[in-house]
Length: 110
Figure 1 (cartoon, rainbow, N blue to C red):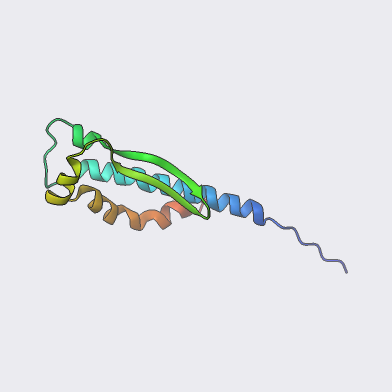
Figure 2: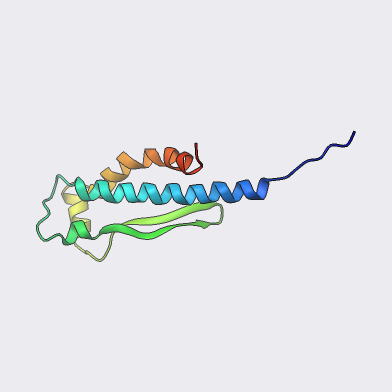
């Protein structure tokens, strides 16, 4: 009796990596929305600070990790808002990051 083994490892790895990238991108997008909508320590007056919150680098595979970057871009006083008046970015991350596993699983079709 001959047994045959079909190897799908490379395809599975590509699928998992694609799902990881999609999950990280979705999580970052949800963080951006959360931070823009929830900054109780400061009011949006000109729209500059709120408008600066965005994805800076969409996720990509870096070695064996899916990495991306989100936050405030080109608003130097945002660090002051973050540290002194409410930590909108940190709060968004605290609320949304726990959903990463779900976002990756959903991208895998589960």
